[in-house]
Amino acid sequence: MAKPQKRYVCQACGSASSKWSGQCADCLEWSTIVEEVSNVTAFSAKHDLRGGGRALSLVGLDAEVTLPPRMATGIAEFDRALGGGLVTGSATLIGGDPGIGKSTLLLQAAARMALAGLPVAYISGEEATDQVRLRARRLGLGHAPVQLASATSVRDILTTLEKGTPPALLIIDSIQTMHSDLIEGAPGTVSQVRASAQELIRFAKERGTALVLVGHVTKDGSIAGPRVLEHMVDTVLGFEGERSHQYRILRAIKNRFGGTDEIGVFAMAEAGLAEVANPSALFLTDRGEGIAGATVFPAMEGTRPVLVEIQALVVRLASGATPRRAVVGWDSGRLAMILAVLEARCGLSFSTAEVYLNVAGGYRIADPAADMAVAAALVSALSERPVPPETVAFGEVALSGELRTVAHAGLRLKEAAKLGFTRAIVPSAIRKAEAADVTVQGYATLGNLVDRMLGRD
Image (cartoon, rainbow, N blue to C red; front, top):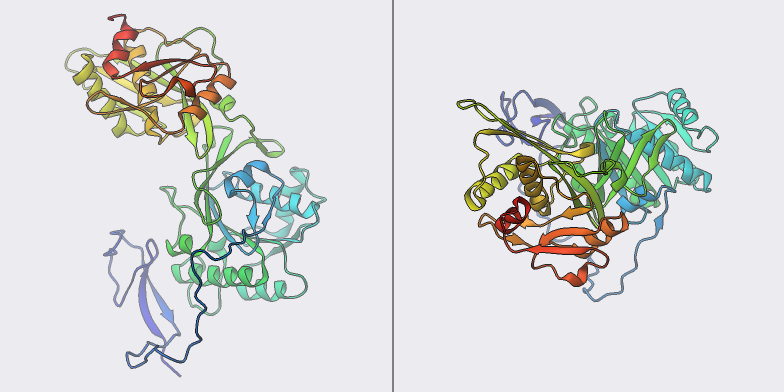
């Protein structure tokens, strides 16, 4: 019998080495290297893989393609993030902060699919079956014919599922609690997570089951465990939100069967997660009279425009004090760039003022089209001149002060008109034909916009 081999694996990045060290040489994390024992014998260099295998059938790019069948979950926002529903035989990984609502969302989807007549299995490695039942009753789903089990052994789970008809949907909550007896090590280690996920995905591919894995996240928000786990699955979804806010966003990070950057928006209610058909209503305050420092920005999430309010506050300080810059929901480096352009190209001074920027509702923006809305909010806060409440603003700001057009201008303007906005501040390159029911005010440079807002033109 071959002697088990020892190796040392980093639990943060999955890199392996032959000896232990306090710091991982690849990801530079400290105290993450753990000793693991493998029963697999070392591969000999004498082996030659040429010959002895089966011949593959190669096909051309122009071969007939059949789209994979999808199953609707009964939750439109969930289906939207998935690209139209769950694909049979696919593997989906969903991650999010503890308590954000991952288990609640999946239990609601499982119950609706079970009520539609599909066989559904929910395996929990973190809770007992009675705890899952109690949550289902609180959500009003206690009558749904979902098959529950509490287990952590992958062998036991697969042995049970091999009997009878395979489920159309299999939920594993969570993959970090699963354990394979083929690999030594505690649940949650790199080797255990990789081996357990591989066996479950193999079962899903062979039996045509849609597999959904729940993944823990690290303190920086990324999914815990080896990065190879995200490469193994077909779809990766991130569940985002703040506990202090009621909204939750389900974001597609990777999707082999659909587009990425699609989102589903939910609101946490007493009866679980409720779908939000109009997300813009969550992030816009009651807009009556104009307020200095507030601008509405039509952001794009995949193919969906979402209107959010950007709020700015500028506070003058006494001479000698160090000004502070605080940003919530946007990139602080991007704010520094906009402030520099306003000072260098537009003649405004923020060097003796504290600047605070906030995206209302806890929403997070990564769209460069927000540059123009941020600049308008800063100028409005500095001059105490409100932006008209019926106005939206979007466009990218270059370091030269030039305003550049952005993608999906027509969709942004259409969504603004739908919610009652009648004016739009945009780069002059955007064609007026894209603005159906919105009056477009185009500007070539940021200086032109500042002059107009301050009445200097």
